[in-house]
Length: 253
Ligand SMILES: Cc1cc2nc3c(=O)[nH]c(=O)nc-3n(C[C@H](O)[C@H](O)[C@H](O)COP(=O)(O)OP(=O)(O)OC[C@H]3O[C@@H](n4cnc5c(N)ncnc54)[C@H](O)[C@@H]3O)c2cc1C
Ligand code: FES
Image (cartoon, rainbow, N blue to C red):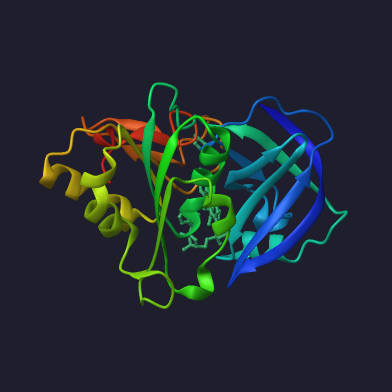
């Protein structure tokens, strides 16, 4: 893990309220895996805490993350121009470890698609990915090119304005018997992950399923306990250090 002063190479709007920022690092940050995240500075004063964002594209010393403008920190980021310097801690957290799997179902919703894209890129040509990706509506659809390495790509929108009407979990289950995945990876809003967990239990699916969680964070490296989530056995886990990727059976959603 390194704390680096990165230079903003570009910062562009890629969908309604969603931006991709590419940071040029001053030195190699080491291997970055899909599912890992950065903690990025978003100004000073009340924005002093850095914001966690999943790595979407790691290409040599260029690292791109995509973010939805939600509050003060991400609004600040959306106004940062090329050439500006930002402090970035990376790479953080664990990742989707798919070494032993061949055929992988990818279930993603909203801004949860970005770490999944990094994972598809990481294992490009080595795994068969079947992707089920949900957006709110057509204005939120982005980066479909990055998902084109999937053997099958199904896009849904809540209102049917692009792709199939419905959500990513429904799309996955309506196709599950045809693809015979030996692992499932997922990232998306809590309601989506909850629905996925409930449906897997209801259908008695035993396929290993790994989810990346998004909690509010402080330090991003295990010290402050801001990001704690509940585990299935009633214990606690730090999303930043023990995750953000967990076996879906091991966490309460
Ligand atoms: C490991 C990890 C990876 C993430 N990857 C991405 C990503 O690739 N793209 C992306 O757009 N977002 C991602 N997030 C969420 C992102 O960190 C928050 O949206 C961001 O920190 C909000 O900052 P803000 O200052 O704009 O909003 P704030 O002013 O801090 O908050 C605005 C609203 O967002 C909610 N919020 C803040 N942080 C989170 C959070 N972590 N999860 C859910 N809701 C939150 C607050 O409760 C509040 O309602 C990730 C979070 C984690 C933990
Ligand atoms: S954010 Fe500090 S322990 Fe996880």
